[in-house]
Amino acid sequence: MKLEQLLAETRSALVQINEQDLSKITQAKDWQSKYRVLMQLGKKLPPVPEKMKQPELLVKGCESRAWLLHYHNKTDDKHYFVLDSEARIVKGLMAIMLCLVNGMSSAELAKFDLNHKFDQLNLKPYLSQSRGSGLTAMAEKIKACC
Amino acid sequence: MPVFDVQQFRQQFSFFQHNPGWVYLDNAATMHKPDAVVSAISQFYQQHNSNVHRGAHQLSQQATRLFEQARTTVCRYINAKSSEEVIFTSGATAALNQIAFGLMHTVLGAGDRVLLTQLEHHANIVPWQLHCQRYGVIIDVVPLTADNQLDMTAYQQLLERKPKVVSFSHISNVLGHIQPIDAMLALAKKAGAITVVDGAQGVVYKQPDMQQLDCDFYVFSGHKLYGPTGIGILYGKKDWLEKLTPIFAGGEMIEQVSFVNTTFNKLPFKLEAGTPNIAGALGLAAAIDWLQLYNTEQLIQHKLLLLKEFYNGLSVIKGIDILSLPVHNAGIVALNVSNEHPADVAELLNQQNIAVRSGQHCAMPLFSYLARPGAVRCSFAAYNSLDDVNRCLLALEQAVEILTA
Image 1 (cartoon, chains in turn green, yellow):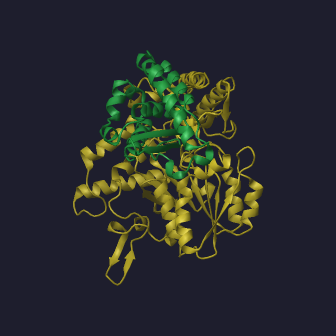
Image 2 (tube, each protein chain N blue to C red):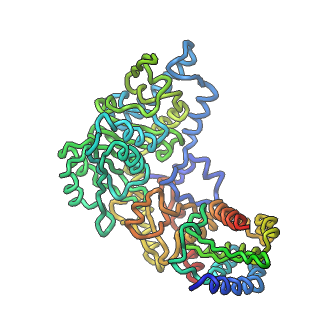
Image 3 (cartoon, rainbow over the protein chains, first blue to last red):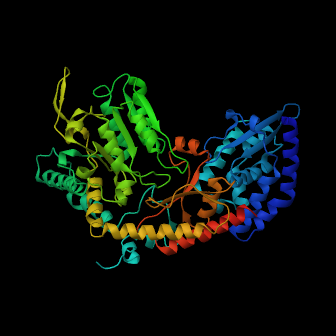
């Protein structure tokens, strides 16, 4: 599988997540329902083939291993991402993050406030310290791309 | 002897009154402290605070007396021959670092061997590695059998290589397996090795008896024995402690200093540079005094009951992969939900106020050997109840249900 194909599949999965699942997360009444949706999100993203999971793509600071691939379209200055993680919850949470940032320009990415967005989605109470720091690491790695 | 009353035992930990919703099963990481320990620490700061071993004033003498009494308490508890053999350190990790550093050059040199086991956590691997590399010392590792127990045949074969030091844990921090340390020590001694026992998990299981074990070194941390963090013990036979080069220098450990040469103070002070953790030592002594109000055998039996209930419950949850054996187990169960990452399982338990540890538990070589990304570790203490066990089992069922939906 090539990066182009992964980018395309991720892009369409993220569109679907954005349209269908984000509202389900905000509306979920209890933690169980919220996590059930999170589990589903991860499954929607294409798995990154083992041989593409190069060490330099690892997001440091995650308890489980997570990889972030990045593509910058220089003609229209837009950033696109692909991610994978060993852990489902991380993958789900990172899918949400990518929904919010995929296709952003360098300037938009630099301004992006993940904490605020996660507050809006009412996800903060569901993040433990270690998971929170993993997401922060992910956000930093994304920002480092621009 | 009255029966063990877990509620009465538990009531002595204010932590549980402040955190009533939580099931705490992360005891192998750190234990809670009974109020007796917390009071001993605040009492020291409120009533007796002074530095030890140096003041001309009476307050310092009183603090010194309390500090040395704490050493005597530890000495009696572990049945060391004399309190000179009891060194206060910041914990088991510091003690192991002192031993590994201290034996290099004086005892260990190029071509000598150190024997460790596949079960060790990083504190009993990396200090050796760090110094062995510099001094040309070779490390051998005892492998495990198919059921994750130490391979005693391989152990005996490796002893034939005449290691100068054999260092192993009393109880595995990941699996909870109690190692056959009597047999291991006897074999190591027959092979003429210096013996080091990492008692970080062992000391709370059973009161260790230094004269009966007859190992050369035994180390443990206070915070895994109902005591405070930042205090631990390096026990060593006097002759071996004398041979250790101090890893830290300064303060009380010195007898004479000039810029040409320095001579060290006698034991135990030689290995206690700087101002010691006085309140920590008093807290540890208070933990030991408090623990001795209870019958060790009853505490062990209670933990075995919890373990039995937990294993019974696990056997009916689908897809649980248990790494720990139920026999010769000190109360630690490492497990996974098949095909799921331990971080996910632990997070779903966390959502249900069940505190466990997940990951590789500072024992990466063990997990590469087990070929697993890590495990969820449930570790029990005597203050855990059957209700805790059942709540954890229900939470695990819920986690499995969400993960496999």
